[in-house]
Image (cartoon, rainbow, N blue to C red; front, side):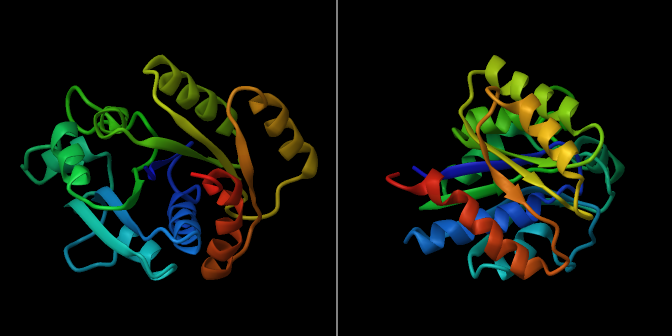
Length: 217
């Protein structure tokens, strides 16, 4: 079953592009996908969120489960609105009701808190999702990538692979080689998404990175 969770080494590293690219790849392989944003923060009601934006880039269906105005982690954002923070079991149950392939986008990284006791990793475990790690190519990404992989391994959760993203400009080849060397053997590298200010073109290019992953599955 094609149920994926897209997380990142940080915020604003290209998760929405990769989410859209994976949904497009699924569509090209004959599998319609629903793009889901578990918790959207930092937007008022009516503003276009990440799920709708990703779906607009690939024609997929989209669904946003929870939204808070404050641009913060879900726990803090919920408290700011005097609302109950989201729970992993509730989010997982909502995902279980969706038929077909699902591409779920997190917020920030894997261990961003949902509430006092849970983080996004708890949703991944409860919903049986395979993780795609988006590694934004900038200083600090290796530490965040390795910590994410370590947490997933500790929880014995399946990892589909990692995509390296040049989010704000072309990285030096030597730096990219250092990242690849460090991650080699720790997580499968699905590919590198080069910098492109054209979001739609970037998504189309990114969809090709998932051809091998989706073959025969």
